[in-house]
Amino acid sequence: MTPTLQRRLTLPGALAIGVGSMVGAGVFTSLGLAALLTGGRVGPLVAALVLAAVVATCNAISTAQLAAVHPASGGTYVYGRRQLSPLAGFVAGWGFVTGKTASVAAMATTAGLYLFPGSPLGARLTGVAAVVVLTAVALRGITRTAQATVAILVPVLLILGLAVVSGLALGEAGRTPGFDPAALDLGGVLAAAGVLFFAFAGYARVATMGEEVVDPERTIPRAVLGALGFTVVLYGLLTWALVSALGAHGLAMADAPVRAGLEASLGPGWGWLAVVGAVLASAGAMLNLLAGISRTALAMAREGDLPGRLATVGERTGTPWVGQLAVAVVVILLVLATDVLTIVGFSSFGVLVYYAVANLAALTLRPEQRAVRVPRAVNVLGLVLCLVIAFTLPAVSVAAMVGVFLVGVGGRWFLQTRRPGR
Image (cartoon, rainbow, N blue to C red; front, side, top):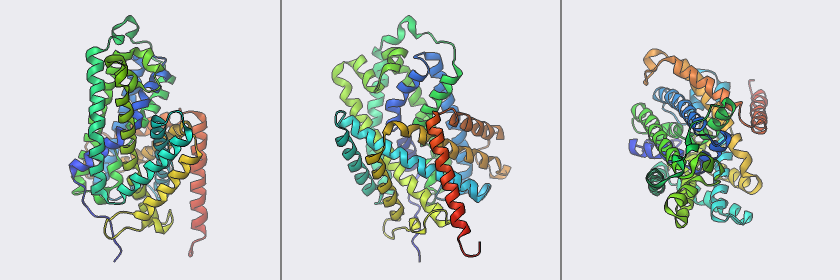
């Protein structure tokens, strides 16, 4: 009998994986970049944060609706196949696997750069070591992954909590006349929303592990929406605190905004906490991404869209170990060969296409299938916003990812024409 994935993940573990996937390296860098893209003005920055949260909420609702109907590993790859077409499912799965594999490489390199800012080689080797260690943890099973996520997440949340409290209580920069909101700049708001969406991405990670969730029809929607709600509140408070500590212009100029906020409110000796938090947050997000990518690859391999060996599941641990090792190898190659700065837009485009398919698939659900009862207009809004933000990302990232999609779809068509009976 072929080993299958086992239902071991309960609601607390699913919530931890959702929050741990979102509160990653992005929150330690994206707020500063978003402030820069909005010209160091509070009004556009807040608008971008709200827009990113709205897009994430629409996507989360669509994902929760679909996960309750299709509680299987693979997330939107499965939903797209079953609700739309095999090609739609492939586009979603290919965007997730390629985009998120690149994202893991970016996070690994970022963690290395925080620890060895003056040594590119040291940073890359540290990133490789992180991938090896986290893959070893993920190979022990979904229960161990959830436990490790909690162990990483608790100190990260404590550090961010300290940044919020100290910024709001002691920050003075945000109380100067320069704090007044400015007129909205639509282009800057859309670009900043795309960057902030990278920090939100991860709320639906548990949906890619649907076959391992206990009582998935109830647990997955609660975990997806609960994790997103917590993170939206956290990001809103953190933005308020950093503007209070640094001012909007100071936030825009900060390469490491959380570190700068702690140093501004508590003193220069407190910046090391942000370094620890960024490294831990990167590790937590990487761990859950490695697990999520391998589950999507497993689902694609079962349907013949990726090599069949990727569907191999270990008897003792119940993990898709071949897929996890394959993802780790690709990530290590990317860490050694790529520039981290080009990857964020690449990843965001792939994930926005992934969620565009999710919103479109949710539109096709019958009324009795919609576990989260909201108007279909929510699915339409999510679809439109995903596509608008995706195509307002930097042109280089859009062009590169469109090329990746064309290669994937062309390769799939070529292989299918060579199969017996086609």
